Length: 67
Image (cartoon, rainbow, N blue to C red; front, side, top):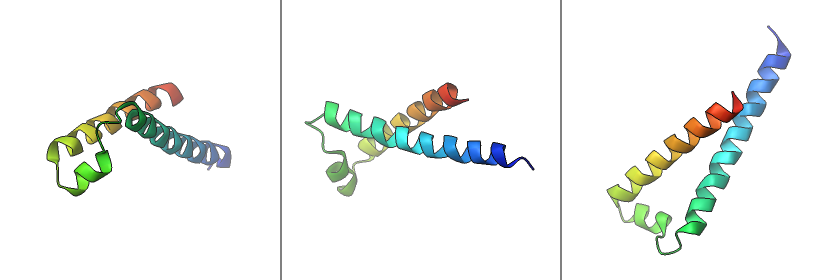
């Protein structure tokens, strides 16, 4: 087993999570009229679907860029 490959995979996973968080925060700042956290707590399914689709799209973009 190559430990450098394992280390690189962990590094890419951490980078992906950090980029995902930063992307979500950027979208949150760009849409100040929508409070995503409050809407999710109220049970707004449309906001949940939007955030899920947003995370999938960002993950596909980050995955293509990293790998």
